[in-house]
Structure formats: structure tokens, C-alpha cells
Amino acid sequence: MTTKAKIMITGASGILGRAVHQEFKKYPYEIQAISNSRPNDERISLDLCKPKALDEALNDLHPNVIIHCAAERRPDVAEKDPDGSWHLNVKVPEQLAKWAKENGTWLIYISTDYVFWGDQAPYQVDAVTKPINLYGESKLAGEKAVLGQSADFAVLRVPVLYTTSPEYLSEDPVSLVAENILNKGLGKHDHWSRRFPTNVADVAIVLEKLVRFYYDHHDMSGIWHYSGNERYTKYEMALLMGEILDLDTSEYVPDDQPPQGAPRPYDCKLDPQRLEKYFVLPQSIFKEQMTELLNPYKRGKSC
Ligand SMILES: NC(=O)c1ccc[n+]([C@@H]2O[C@H](COP(=O)([O-])OP(=O)(O)OC[C@H]3O[C@@H](n4cnc5c(N)ncnc54)[C@H](OP(=O)(O)O)[C@@H]3O)[C@@H](O)[C@H]2O)c1
Image (cartoon, rainbow, N blue to C red; front, side, top):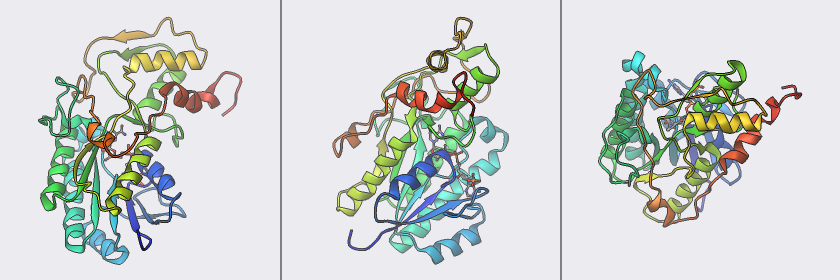
């Protein structure tokens, strides 16, 4: 990179966007962090669903790279508000991609393993997509909207994400398990869906490397998969967390039926082979990360 690249991060107040912001701050980039309801000293507030305001902001900030993290990522919320979710997950990336193409900006769109049905894992980057719920459908439509504008853009698919520094327990699907065992005590936990919990800090490292390789003139276009490599059901996560917290786990109940609410896939393991050809992938150890997450909640500790 000869000049300081301007990196726009949308969803910069979300669990992934915060990690991406922290990672990119380690390097000489100029960061443009966009949030909606959670601005702060480092993040501006912009409702991406307001097309005129979005175009004005893009023309004003003129990023060189856009990392588009903002989305409605909760499947049950997406089912309840299909129009709003479709706008955010499809129309917004389409507008970003159109502007990016016209202005020579590179765009990375964050997508999900939920573009797959979950019955044919592991999934390669060119595997046939078949979303099982509206959230997955909208994210797949977002991918198509982005790559339809330019085949040079990139899509990074990731599975269930967690952070070790949530703003509140239950901010992500993994810390929600922790909240359930801490506040509700015993209970049933999904032991049907196979998940590959992935640390947002690792995804952020991958994103910075994608940008770096792009600036080093590698072809980083198209679809990429990145995933944690340890498999857990939510029941197994609960057992691990209970052990870390020194709780009695003997009455946790494994639920072998598909979860209630919006349909969830069984196993969407993403194969990261294509990425592995470029660099060594970061791989946090889930137990270590959960120990860090839960340390403030151990008995006898105030939080
Ligand atoms: N979390 C997961 O398990 C998971 C799994 C697979 C893929 N993904 C994908 O990863 C990406 C990041 O997800 P995440 O977990 O970080 O999401 P998140 O924590 O729910 O954060 C969502 C972000 O989107 C922003 N946002 C929502 N509506 C907006 C609007 N109208 N205008 C501007 N910004 C808006 C929010 O801003 P404010 O909070 O400031 O309002 C927030 O920064 C998404 O594309 C998601 O589909 C997530």
C-alpha cells in the first residue's frame, strides 16, 4: 500500500465490527467506523437503510475498501420483520456494491453458513446453496447482489460467532448459552445442531489479511469460507461452561430435537481450503476463550 487506505467498516458497533475495528487499528489504515444506534468517539451514526443519507456519506467519506458487517443476523427477528431485514440484508449491500463499483472501491460482504441447508457438510466455496430460513435467504440474496455488481468483490462466509468481550451476556448466540446457565440454572439445551463457534477476533485477522493480499495484487475476489474447527452443540457448550464456572451440570438436559423458532440447519461446516492456500488461519481454542469470557462470572467474583 503506498497511501493510507481508507477502510469503511459498517456494523462497527456489532460483535464482529468491533473486533474488525480493533484489528485494523493495529495497522496504518484510516478507519471509517459506521454504527447506527451505538455511535461513540470513534464511530459515526448512519442509518444504512436511508438510501440518500448512505449515498451522501459514501460520497463524503470515499472509502477505498468497504467491509460490510452490518446486518440483521437473528433468524427469528428476520422472520418477524421480513421487509426490514430484507432491506438491510439485501438492498443495502446492493447500494454499497453499486457505489463501490462506480468509484473503484473494493467491497467485502460478510455472509453466513446459513446459505446452506445443512445436510451435506463440509461445504466448499462452490457448493450448491439452499438456505433453510429467511435470514439465510436474505444473506444469499445479499451475496448475489454484491457479486452481481462486480465479480471482483469478495464474500466471506462465517458460522456462529462469539466475542470474549460482549457488551452484555447474550449479545451473541454463545454468550446466550452462558446467560441461560447462569440466570436460569438448569434446563434443556439444543443437542441437535452442530456448530463451529468462531471467535470474531480470528475473523478480523482473516479480514485484515484479505485486504492486505488484495493490496499486494492477489486475486481475492469471490467466495471465501472461514470457520473455527471445533464442533459443539449448545448442550456441549453448556457443559463446558458449567465446568469452567464450577456449576453442577448433572441436570442439564440434551435436547435431540431440531430447535424451535425459525428452522436451523443441522451441520453447515464450512471448508476453509481456499483461504488456507494464502495464509495460516488463526484458530482460537474454544475452552480458553470461554474461560476468558466467564472468568468475571465465577463464584466469589463480582462483575
Ligand atoms: N453473529 C453471528 O453468529 C453470525 C454468524 C454468521 C454470520 N454473521 C454475519 O456477520 C455479520 C456481523 O454480525 P454481528 O454478529 O456482528 O451482528 P450484530 O452484533 O447484531 O451487529 C449488527 C450491526 O449492524 C448494525 N446495524 C443494524 N441496522 C443498521 C442500520 N439500519 N444502519 C446501520 N447499521 C445498522 C448495528 O448497529 P447499531 O448496533 O449501532 O444499531 C450493529 O453494528 C453480519 O453480516 C452477519 O450476518 C454473524
